[in-house]
Image (cartoon, rainbow, N blue to C red; front, side):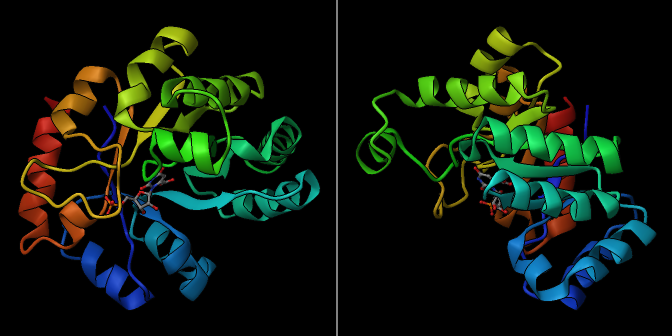
Length: 229
Ligand SMILES: O=C(O)c1cc(=O)[nH]c(=O)n1[C@@H]1O[C@H](COP(=O)(O)O)[C@@H](O)[C@H]1O
């Protein structure tokens, strides 16, 4: 069982490092756009030196050549996991995978399907895709699987279906994780860590429920105990 991934959604390096330094154990952390755009690769070097595992979440989505070149740079940082948007298409994902394989095979490459802040109305009326949420996520996940990616980002609500269709080894990295007493914030497809475990998520991503809590260590330990069972 992997550790819960803590989303370090802070806007400067020192705040992020102060946060992780409260813990006296190695963590699996996510560096997203906010922190990376401010700190650049420096934050990755610092976190690696401290012995943490890293998911670099830059959600690349562009033409195949641009994403391929960007992923070469990202793979050279030797992080554990990176992502692209599956909506970028087959050629983009194939180029991304080629870059990872060439530069650092150990980095897991996953694709975002439908963001956990998206609901079915948004797919049908904003994206104009005449599918249910489950059909759209399965369609994008199947495309990512065909491109030999390691897995996808999806919500817990689609995890079981993806395990049935694409196998247990295909990663289901699920954000939108909350405890019952937490606010929903800007998320739509949410779940507790208990349900995530029952429905077959392979990784959970938790941000504000831990980082904004009065006692992040206690909160994290609670998540870990529920998630690990
Ligand atoms: O790729 C992601 O990590 C991601 C995909 C997605 O569909 N939904 C989603 O919330 N995320 C990220 O997961 C984290 C969730 O944060 P909280 O809502 O605070 O737990 C944020 O850093 C998001 O950028």
